[in-house]
Amino acid sequence: MRDDFYQKATGKTGVQVKAFWSKQIFSGKGQPPKEVGDSAAVKGLVANNPNLIGYIDKSALDGSVKQVLSLK
Image 1: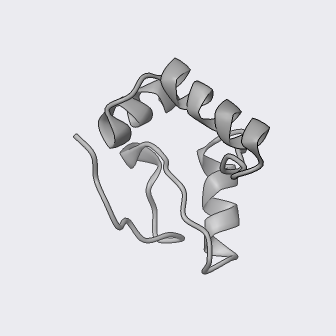
Image 2: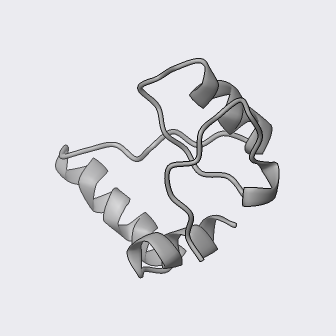
Image 3: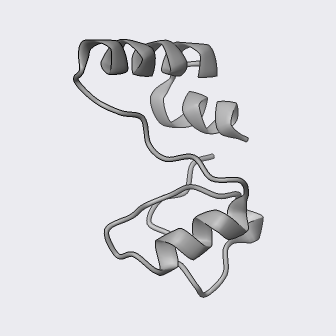
């Protein structure tokens, strides 16, 4: 799911995104977003913190979080 998301959201492969973040970390310019185990964990974090955003499969969407973008 992650590679599919990267391709749809950025037009880059998972390897290209990893290379980008490696450069950011090495240069001190940034840190990658936090990764969690599954859709339930993402929903839990996002539902409890209005400053977070995450991505999950549409089939996992429920009333605990709000969809702001759908990628096809």
